[in-house]
Length: 313
Image 1 (cartoon, rainbow, N blue to C red):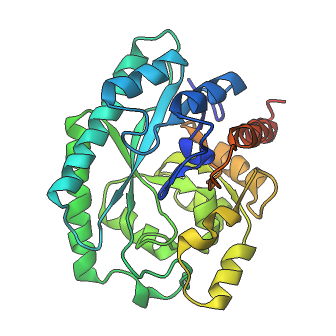
Image 2 (tube, helix red, strand yellow):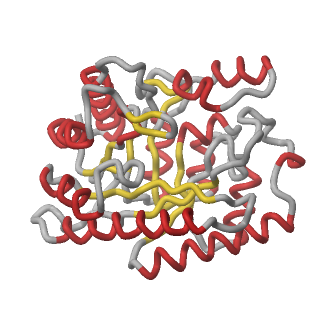
């Protein structure tokens, strides 16, 4: 049986692959996975669908580096309550890509005991949604009718994932309609989904990650280990509505250099018996020049800090 910390994954987002960014010009998907494998990570999330190629190519890159797939992040238009045809097709492709990678990994010798790779569902937010809103202001959240439509869309996504034999989880994300404690509570009360504890998003959304690890212990099935500084959020909130992209990368820092009580989170996860993936994330923005070496150094640091917290050093 796996224990806490037996399976630690990295993620392309830590190498600048997210949202509007496509990573450092001196690094590609193969270089990212090679770096993680060399440093001692046992797996990785997939990154944006298509980043590593088609389903077979993605599976091949993971297999080449002996890494287990930990999951893949997918945003859903919860405020609209329905997909476009393109959006649904994209979700199907994401499921096929993760399924192919899981199946290829299962053929390897290191597959035994790996936690499930999960479709990590999240809300896409909406145009104009303030990224630094008051976590106690319920007027900015989805009303009951809109939330009912969102629940239907989530059920549809779950059904598609189930058709591909994939596990699901939901990631509360800053700058979306599921970020604050009350929004996560509503999600858990109205859907059967488990929840991804992202320590950075939780803190910035006004939720103590240690308390969250205990509050939602029976529903946490995936963990993103992230350290953040509160100062960029506080500055953005003081200046008025600000896009998350304007300050998000500044808030993300190497583990141990931010405001998250990482030791407390690890202790809480151990007390509550969590044994799934610990996915290290440090959302980084590329500046257009060579950065792979710095990204790699940060991830080596992060793994060392996390292992120290786990008592592996």
